[in-house]
Length: 396
Image (cartoon, rainbow, N blue to C red; front, top):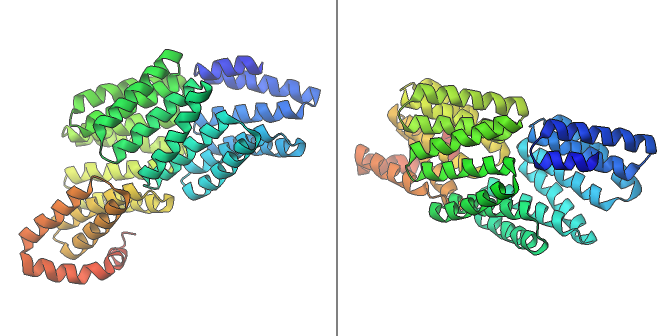
């Protein structure tokens, strides 16, 4: 039963996989096979993770952890620990996720479990990427890639290649990112890995979007959305909907952007995906900004910023601070605008975000608009207490 479940899982037939795993669990319970029960519970948890049902996922992995520790089953202990880390990552507690990933990595290294060592190295890379540390993330991804290649783990070789692409995209090297995405996509299509196929199609869409080819990006996003819906991958369904919203916004279709962003937001809220919840609130703010509704724009940016700060997503925080600054400038609230731009500038510098150029350009344009003397007075007032100024206005 477990073998049939694994086959269904890797073909992204998740309902079948869950049913086979549950039947395997029933058999192992009758046989009092505790090691088998731990394996089955971990497998069922992994299905619920893809579905975005984090509370249910945690229940299964915590049970698996209890059984594994009871009999000294280090392999299933490590899988359970790392999987709990993945749940916390999706729920927005990246620091806690890192603690679990590090524990899982130590277990894998102690018992010589190379495959899971590579997986947890990749997970640590993703966690540091979420914290805005792209170069540190690349270090972890490259170690994971080397292990996957060494042991012939094609699935995680593709995942590692795609993750390296994400890091280079964050650093502004989009052409290099595309090279990695195309390699990852080729592997996923070759082995029939539908979940990762959809993910890398979405990533290629993001890259095309950054390069200004919005129509091509939409083509990739729509393919990614179809795959996510076909296999029940709620997380990537939400990501694809949100990405489509961003694309239609750039085509000047703000109402359509709002429609897609609201669908993406609902999925993030239903699945407890805090990081993407913050992202889609920010996208709604962008769309309402295009419609000239400053009140709604600030309202959605406020919600987004609070969530993003709670999850430690520094890159997105920098983007939001810049966007808030632009909104305040449009409302002639120049002190708040300068404060937001300064905070964005600091964060972009720390995270090596290419959007730094946009924020610096916004500051220069504001100086030209106000005149040097008035701008320098505002700068002198805002620079020492930028966070205080923004907090006092109820933004943080």
